[in-house]
Length: 315
Image (cartoon, rainbow, N blue to C red; front, side, top):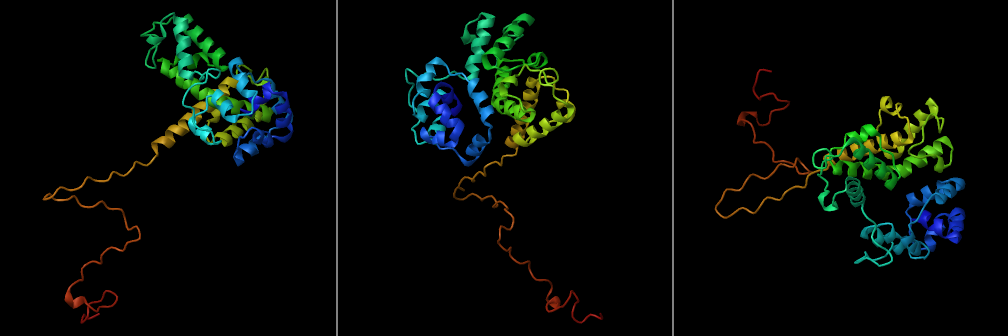
């Protein structure tokens, strides 16, 4: 949001480049410690390049020329929770000058409908490309290229061929767009090149001249930044920046799926026992700091024995 405002407001751009987190305070945006640290760590030239390549839709420029962080967040499609985080009420309607941004799912469905020349109402997440739409190879290629242009991403032909439904394509687009900006920033920092040169279509060997050592270091950077594991045998086969983004996004998805499966299930409180029925035994929770009842005593002639020796025995 700060970069978008800087791209349309020259005065704010100067403040952001020189004072960083202070620029956020000027529009009432409270950054967390991690966000401030990240913003302050970006080199000035790199931040200038990011601002230069940022584009704000015409219908949103009015919001970013003002000083209301809530309006800017609304223009970027922020949720009610994000607005509440800066003391702004969640929006209850759509302002005429700030239309709600279309979701990735809606945008993908629109592209598919246009390329296949069918009503958009026919397109759902479960719509299959070859079965329901009977899309030919050239039509699937046209859909892939249109999605790439719409979202500024790259999708390998082999990857697109694996998509069976429109929902599969939507999930992939959301995964890629979520990690792409940070992956590009990490690549630019590791290679010490301006971010505009790091495009999804850029070749690692020819365009960016990445050495084997740099590729290994880049993989380590991504593992640490995203807390994921990417096998080196697969990573070293990457040919483009888009391949690196795709590998990283897939690894992030695997991690999140694994974390979701490990979520503890809430304990269900048993329903009250009806009168006259036998209650179920209480569940066992372990000791939880409560000492269990002692076991019943042994035979009477063992009482007072020491060390497990029966009184009166020959031993």
